[in-house]
Each structure stands twice: as C-alpha cells, then as structure tokens.
Amino acid sequence: MKKIYNEIAKMDFPARKIAKEQQARILERAMERIDGQCAIPARRRPRFRWKFAAAAVALCGLCAGGVAAAGYFLSPAQVADQMEQTELSTLFAGPDAVEVQQTQQGGNYTVTLLGLTSGGNVTGYWSSDWGAGAPPADRSYAVVAVAHTDGTPMAALDDEKSEVSLDNSMVSPLLAAPDCPIFEYNIFTMNGARYDIVEDGVRYILVETDSVEAFADKDPQLAVVLGQSGLPALTGNYEQDPATGAITPRAEEGCVSLLFDLPIDPSRADPERAQELRDQWLNGGETAPQEAPPEQQGAEDPLSVLSGMTPAQVRAEGVLQSSGTVSISDGIYGEGWYYGEGGFVAPILFEEGVEQEQVASYTSEGEVELLTHHADGTLTVEVWQLPAE
Image (cartoon, rainbow, N blue to C red):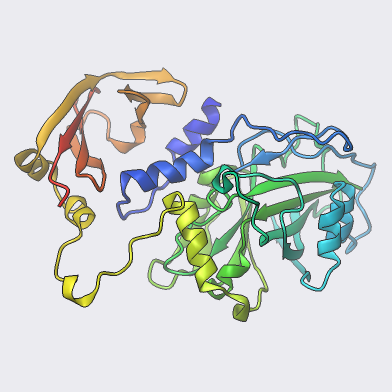
C-alpha cells in the first residue's frame, strides 16, 4: 500500500491549477479500489480482477513451456475465451470488432495491439458511478500481447519474480487532444479494468473502459508501459503538447513506453455522449459549467479569481478559519505531513530547508487552503474563507 501511495506522491501534476473538488475526485478514482476485488462467479475458476491499476493479480492462467511460433498470437476472441468471457468473445468476433495487429518493440519486449471492440458491459465489471442504474451499453475493449523478443517465455502470473506484472506495468487509453489532458483522461478516470493471462509463453492483457468511441475525434491512443504502474506510469512516461494535444513517449529509466494508434473511425464520435462521460468522470455526474451568455461574459468566474490569488492576497481579503503546524511523519501514504481529517502533503512539494508558501487548493465556495513550509521542516496549514462571489 505505502509503495502505491509513494508513487502517487511522485506524480507530475499539471501545471495549471485545478479546483480542490476535481483534484480530490481524480485521485480518489485512482485509489478507491486499491484493496477491492470483484465477486467471483461460481461458474468460473478462481481469479481476481484489478481496477485502476492498483490491485495485485488478474485472471489466473497457465504458462506453457515455450513461446508460440513467431508472428502467431491468440486472436482477441480466443483470449476472451481463455478468460471464460463468452459474451466478450462474441463481441470480438462481431461486426464492430477491429483487427489491428500493430507491433512495436521496446527493450527485450515485443508488444502487439491485437484488436479492439465495443459493446455492452459483458464482463461483470461494476462502477459506483453507475449507482443503482444499469451499466452503460457502450464499453470499449482492447487486447495486447506481450512477448520476449528473444523468444524466452513470459513468466506465469503467479511467479513473484515476473518481470511484467500488474505492479509494474500499465495499459491505458489516452486522448491526443488539447482539451483531454493525460491526467484527466486515462484508465483510472474512465472506469477501467484490466485482466491478464499467460498462454504459451505470451502475456495477454485485456483492458476495458467506458466508451472511447465517443471520443473518436480526439485521436484515441493506447499507452503501454512496462516497468512502472499507477498514474506515475502515464504522467512520467508521456509528454503532451498543451497546444496540439499530441502525445510523445519519454520512457523513464528502466521503463519501456509505447504508444499505439486506436483505429476508430472519427465519424463514430458522439460529442453529446462524450460530454456525459466527462461530467461523470470529472465532475461526479454534475454537468460541467457552460460558457456564460454574452451579457454575462464580462463577469469574472469565482474560481478564476481564486486561482490567481497569492497567499498574501488571501490573507488580506479572507477570514482565517483554522491554522495548525505539523512535522513530517510516516503514515499510510508514506512520508509527509499529515494534518486535519485525512489531509496529506508530500515532501516533494517543497525544497528542504527553504521557507516557501503556496495556495494549495480552493473551492467554488471560496474556501482556500494555504501551505507554509518552514526552514525547520514543519508545515503550517491555514484554511481561509473568501467571498464566493
């Protein structure tokens, strides 16, 4: 657990500020199912599922004693069959399925995007986003194969020394558009799940998410990282041009980072459905704020005002609600400053021995949190209330 939290603490957060509610939601989506395991249907052999790149093991599979002949892999439908996902196998054999067969190499690995399809929620995955309602009928599925380039077989799933595992690899859709930053659009926020098997020395990885097809006009791509997991695998191994949205791999030391195009016809994009999903993923189901009518466009948005304020301005215009100073300590999230009811600040935010202060977060209700890092290593946390309008 601590290892996972420490990885999140190392993340490269976006340079632009985001509201406290949205930041909390994104991180919550990445962490909420770390310990979760889905119920195992009685008709299937025991297996576990991970969600949001956090749990430990996926589907149980057997590794035979050799790699399959060069150029040969199971088809996506066959992979689904091996996972005992009959309905998914039917989807991969249906008219909406796309056979891809894109292959890239990195390090000692050959990675092939075998195919993708879309359809109903046929795997039994469930998200709290859906509440008591029916699961969406537009899930997206993709299958990749990972093999050693030198022909040696990939390790079995239960091999603790496996060089590719759920703990050190990541497969996630990304959208190469300027309004779809990596931090906000990935397998964590998109209600994603992953399943692994090893057959004939090849590791097959199935990922599913909410509809990628709805964003077909946003240049959908699939990121594959070997050597790192969690959100840092995406934010640390890929760069995104803020102006064009173009995504470029930049593998960190010890990692392989690959990027595949997802050949989805742009005409299948559904802007209305895409907006519904955006609201669900990033705003908890609430409709995102719309552009103000012309007669109101001169008025300043409260969040824009708050985001541009300095600590000095906050103190001059606000009313202090609480203040406390804490020392660095070790806890459930790793080493850092713990305060209040679940508050945590990672050490990487401040330079050791340097006095620094910053606006840490703000809400639409005008609540602003200030952090002051002292040269002695302590941290003062202040909560100020400013007018929301």
